[in-house]
Length: 269
Length: 333
Image (cartoon, rainbow over all chains, first blue to last red):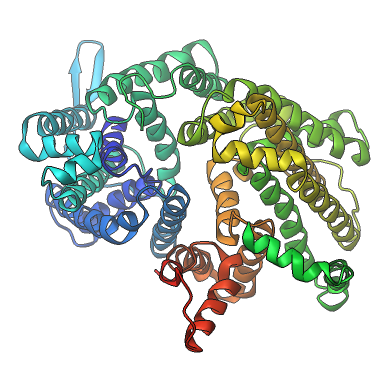
């Protein structure tokens, strides 16, 4: 799941050099919109998921045009815009729905049993959708024409302009994909755990770590680093308790970045 | 820079003008509790003063070309140090507050050494993760720091009323601002700005880049630690949420809204962003939209922050009078 959100963030970061700090909020509100469609309007959960994804993909286009494009290369301004959007989105949700516990209805019910192992189908589904979407994203970047154009823009914006690539169009597409992926992840996570207006903050921190550790311009690297971080996240609590594990985990990331600031698979920004 | 010199040259003829204005402002601020004596508003003003120290010390690090996204965490180090020493060792506040600053400065300088090899965006992101690591490390020893629920039972400085505390904070803030102002406009501050502009040129004229960057972080963290320790003695309850990623981002926002290019910027930004939402407190749930609105207005209309507002109004005024002001369109878009 982290990997999906991270892919979305990486798309935007690679293309425009903007760290979308509003990504956590989009992830959160994606889950809430799916919940609204599925429970309040009583639509099939899968249709609700698709609709929420479509809404946030178009929101991504809007974001790109009015919030990101004017501030390419201006780190301070983009931080301010993103925090502003985050505050607005979080408070919309907080005011309308409050902090009551709610969860997206299950996509599939039941528990898969094989001997001693029992896994709910929900987990399997989350894992499968995450894997499939990641696969599609990698295929898209590496094999299609638009994906190649994205890569070109990542490597050198000016050169991409000179080659006749419509940079703005490709950028808004990347933002649409990024925000759409965040919404999918939010909805799936919402069925898996409970929804909470501030669940985006933790997610944002994790995902930023993932994207930076994988390095700018690398999509495949995110998957590998995501698996490594996931494994670390699972193993460290065995040795240490709770917050010690978190502290050590983040400290390890800091130390790795000190020695290799551009990440494992990245290039200089 | 040229504006700065022009400003100096007009004031230089009347040397008493600047200190006089400042003293009048400080006296007015001193009188505030007499007019607005409700404890709630005094509480807001105390918070504003504390965060002014934090925001200005943030800017002190930022002028050396480093964006320290761990600043709230260093404030947290000062706060938790003061809180724990006063709770468990019952040290007096006049000892814990400066020591809190020293500890924060020490840890800041120690971490600044390895961080000195990073620049620009990489520095910002690594310090962001450093801040997260510090916050987790603070809440991990549950018996000492109270863990996630927070640290309670810190000795309050003035239990009866918060008006004495207001004056203490005011004194601390004024002293810190004077110190940071002297620091920024000393030779060291100029050196830091040179490093920010081009570390290669700075290095080639014999500036020890690593040393000065560590110095900037140390000084900035010292004042953040002092502010944190004061906050601990004021609030008597500490929670990690005051020092995590979002808290840091809000400090960044205070600085950027005010204008990062000017010493007065963080002061204006902090004061406005804390006080204006409180004026509209009756609107309750809509208050966060006001802060977000200020933020977006500043981003789109005032690229230099609120401090750039008089200049913008002046240029519009000149335009109305038919004079040509070069480069005004960049200000308006």
